Length: 378
Ligand code: ATP
Ligand code: MG
Image (cartoon, rainbow, N blue to C red):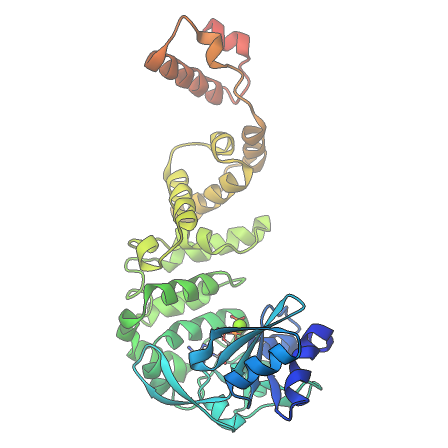
């Protein structure tokens, strides 16, 4: 349906009406073929970036030179961004980012992409072009490097992480990972140390957002590809967490899963945002604390308390206590009935704070049943 919407049509029309070619490529084609949601639209064209800028302005669309050095112009049409990238071929590489030159040949553009399923193109009329056999691999759930896996990884070590990420999302869980790709990842694992932490963090969060990333992460660890990016991480609790998530219909959440994976300094090693770092710390602290479901619900709110308890069960291997969800809900709804004014002027300053804390602890321990009068009488 995105293929036929007028906003997208306007972008391909502006190119084809000027005598250029336009092909949809990458995730939008792959996901449409799988019947999965599409979030960003990538378009390949033989028009040069300056020409794309010019045509977009003339068509009354908004061109933004988001990556003009490597050929990408974002054309905003009806508020929807479309990444329009000039056909490219790789010319040189430093192992961290490929260096590119323009080409007029779709086949060359396909060869610089990472996996066969990511090198599927579609004309504006919906005809599929499959220069490297991606359709067959997509149907088989096989994430396969284009050409020599070892060489492609040495061009850009991020492809190791992308290999595991795309397997988690689009691979056939019955078949496991492509053996040739897996062996090449294992052989080049040390190259991961050369990547920026931003790029690593971005890929890891996308991997961990997959419905069940645990087989991929376990394979990553077994291939020595987890240790270089997150030393000390343990894939075992992640598998337990995903299982528990399924039982309580908890949607995938990368930070919760990262909390299960553990490892040294995930905040620094994956360049987490402040908000992500705080949430990760809160979840781990709550999971490893002694506080029961009611107290966690009261202190963290229902949603985060549930997550902390799932995490605790995953990390300790202990089952979730009977009735835990009701207790969380009760805690989240409870309101501490004593106000500072109730204790004044009998208590003041630090003594007031300490007394409030003491009464609150007693109230929590009572399962939120002690009333204001009972607490004040005690
Ligand atoms: P999604 O957006 O769902 O994560 P995607 O396939 O669109 O999936 P992107 O990271 O947005 O993935 O990249 C778009 C396309 O660009 C990919 O499909 C692939 O063809 C190509 N690509 C992206 N990163 C690389 C890379 N590191 N090496 C080679 N090709 C890449
Ligand atoms: Mg994309």
